[in-house]
Image: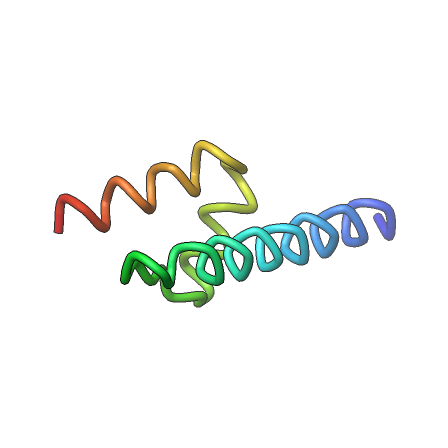
Length: 61
């Protein structure tokens, strides 16, 4: 049970770091993906395709 919780926390931390890094890089072109619980869960589950989906969603909306 503890291993699953540690794995989930690790995934959320990695997702946060990836979103923060993406926002840091893409600020030059005025793209900002908010870091909230929804985007963290989305990226934690899907990984890099989740980030790409968020960027595509940004351009559609």
